[in-house]
Image (cartoon, rainbow, N blue to C red; front, side, top):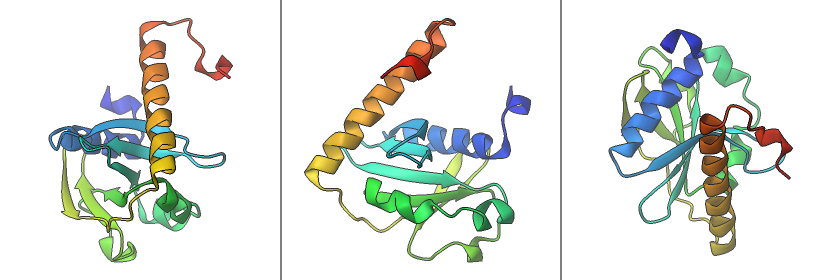
Length: 149
């Protein structure tokens, strides 16, 4: 199965596995707003929301022009990279996770910037709907998530 996944997806899988050990549930490829798609969004046991962007190479990071737009949609922001990634490229004021396809380690916590209650409610609702649609698609081969209003 690993051969079917892109390098960033393999990092996301390891991140999701690790975050579950911290009692965070995750979804991948969530759209917080038009034109944005986060690699991993995590929902913690106290309602905290983290965004994790998975970067598989220097080029992948350097061509990302949207990452700062994700900051307003989470309480903490992280980069997830493999152990060969040149981490000195990553901004010091963001979180850092070293990951592979099987697990991850949080190396540096992203600074906390708490969401407003209204934004938290919106993101929690988006998270729940995204997770439910993904689960329905996994169960029903004829389900078309793109037909949902």
